[in-house]
Image (cartoon, rainbow, N blue to C red; front, side, top):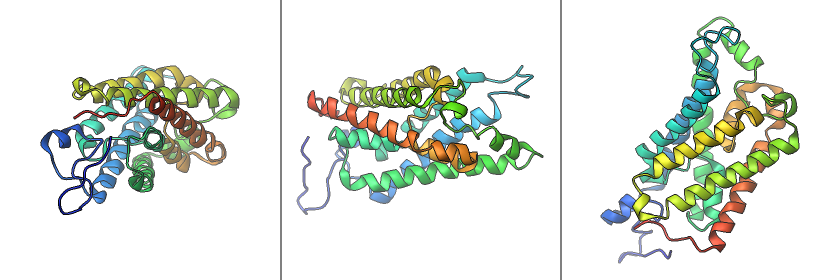
Length: 270
């Protein structure tokens, strides 16, 4: 959809990705506000998801998991934090919180290219800030940080790094396909005016479903910022395998964006 210029030739008067602003004919949010929103949303997503995986998935221990939330709890944590993040700051930045989503929306013609570098940097910074907080909390209990790091710090991986022992090809395909599905759902649900209020829930539930499918395969990335943030504290193996969780999600997202663009769904809610 074409962008309208105002009388003073200032930047876009209405944000394409924000239905609330369009409805109110509001001025565009500043770049700083957008980047801050993306950093906060990614921080919340990683803190909630990775934090649940490290603190609550197996409690009090992996051998005695009477009160742990398991895979289902971790999947819900990622989905719920995404719902909360989109509801809180999605009206400012569009609520990407994921470099693959940003690039998928760019491929679909649904986000402004000038914001892409700032969004991606903000997402990575927000994710690392979240795992740094988690690491700080873990350091308050003797041996907890070392144990989390030895277990990979909820990082993504294949082969030895995969919870179910899945190989590189399986993990790559799962990450690419599931990220593509995720981006396709985002593009479709945010293009429908009648779904505006439901969008955060629909997107969050989709992420929950993706985690239910793929936690045993790769510990679920579909988000390079999440993978980078965990690998920073996960040790040598997650770092050496990190490229898969950057390349596969971005590839899947870009393909999905191009397909949706080719099919003509480029109109956002007004």
